[in-house]
Length: 273
Image (cartoon, rainbow, N blue to C red; front, side, top):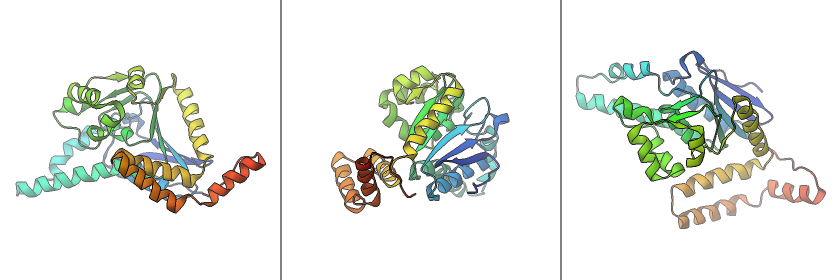
């Protein structure tokens, strides 16, 4: 099938695994206005395309992503200009909410998204990967919350999502200091699932994980992501009630019958998208 074309991303689809690759290597994949919007469009496509069962988010060139393009930051004053200060600030708030939504599209996407990270993953890039289901890195990966060094509060997701990944104390330390975290420390903190060493191994191993997920029941995978995201943001009791309702609707599926038949016949199950 045809995959969408973008000016700042490259999207491919092979054997149910989509790869969304940031593609501004000459700018270390810094996120300009077009990239923010295209990230949302790309993951809306991943979500809506039945043939896609899992996605990989990666970066072209020497780094995953250097964060927000500083030229974009410089243009914000012009974008929100108004003779009334209140209306100017309202416009800025709406701009921030829209940027948040661009990244939240990854979290909303029903398919799991695996981040494959090498080189710099700083500022807005860290906001980006905290939206993903899992994060894997090469040995040269460097993470930091750089907004503090620009005299601003990180505002598109890191401060909300990172504490769930690495704990409140460490998230606060990184947010207040802006210090760099290498791949080994990121692994020890739980920010990444695994440090795969060199970049070529990262690429191979993350695709293997994605391909494994792609062999599972698409309905069950999508439901698992839905329940995990809901449970993270609610009490245990709320999460248990939610999954009871989910499985009351979804448990008795064709996929369940296919899994049982495949185990009985000692073969790999074959699922509809």
